[in-house]
Image (cartoon, rainbow, N blue to C red):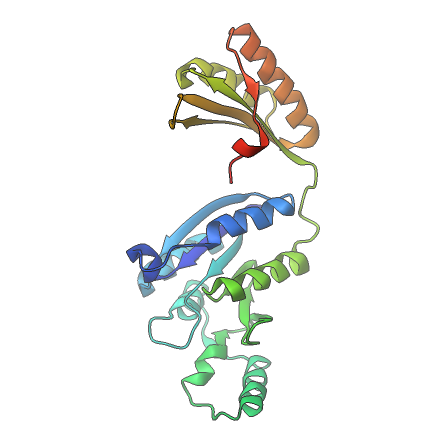
Amino acid sequence: MNVGLIIVGDEILSGRRADKHLPYIVDMLNQRGLCLAWARIMGDDREDLINCYRESFAKGDIVLSTGGIGATPDDLTREAVAAATETVTERHPQGAPLLEELARERGRDLTAESYRLVEFPKDARLIPNPVNRIPGFSVADHHFVPGFPQMAWPMLEWVMDTYYSDLGDDSYREYAVILEGANESTIIPLMEAVMAKYSDVKAFSLPIIDGTPRIEFGIKGPMLNAKLAFEFLKQGLSDLSLPWRRLESHEQRK
């Protein structure tokens, strides 16, 4: 089952805010033996968001979505999700009492605008927020959290641990070598041969252009076949008379 990421916010596209979610979520998934299959950054446009979510629901993937669930007019995620799934938003039966409890604790009065924070697509499930206790929500395998990293990240970890703890493959491995002065065109046939022989393994080639031109060349996939594919790759490099060295820890991609 693929995992996708949707990051919502004009502030990301305009450069007013730098995205921090992508690298964190890639690492979070990798720690659980999972990989991010795709990611999209969307602006605060209702029709674009509806089309994006309609497409992502049709995929049947697990989708993590950050941003756009506040109470201001430019927070369009909940409305777009409802439209994409052909339902309506409603005041959540557990979310509203939670919001009222928070208001009592803080000595604040709730307005109609305040209740927008817990208006979710019909039959949505709540995602607990350990920071300010205002929840996110889930619809099927789509999970929606605030754009603030300090809230979003523990909420998404809760989602993965609660709903998908059995999906991770601890045996996932990645192995790579460094090729000095090689051209990518030289190794394309070897990449194709690796993936043809080991269908559940992916080969990758990443040119590095700072300093001496070189290529990070490797494979990733389930441990057993990843090891076999890596041996096949190294033998292929030897057959091509291409010198290589192991990728050192300080050279690992972040």
